[in-house]
Image 1 (cartoon, rainbow, N blue to C red):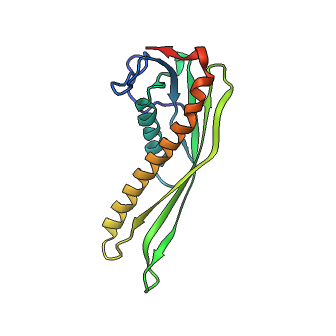
Image 2 (image 1 turned 180 degrees about the vertical axis):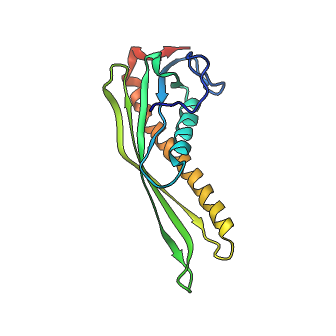
Image 3 (image 1 turned 30 degrees about the vertical axis):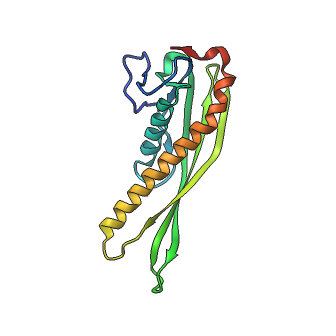
Length: 172
């Protein structure tokens, strides 16, 4: 199921005011990532960060699927959590989250032009044993930072693909 979590104006594509340059831009439709983890909503969080990152990059134009550009899709493969540091009592004082995603960008003709089957990062957060609500907030903030970094890594890696599209990019 290919849903775009970013508003589109009638299929015409979304042009960001932050896009910067007037040069050619690669139209990219971003599907909601498949979530293969038990972490509810993680796929939406990372997908939204991918949309934000590509919208901010003047080389890309987040677009509708029928606009003839690339299609970015993938899956959240895993989220692992372990103790990063412990107190003398043996309880965790910090926990570490590790997330792995698989992403691929198909070109207009349907061939894979970029792929990373194991884009990974980690983030630690503070555990407050006496305040589980605060620990939960710390974990949520860690997931936000982690999602942002994963999306940024993907954007930087995809930047090299932009040149490969040559005439398949749009002039603003």
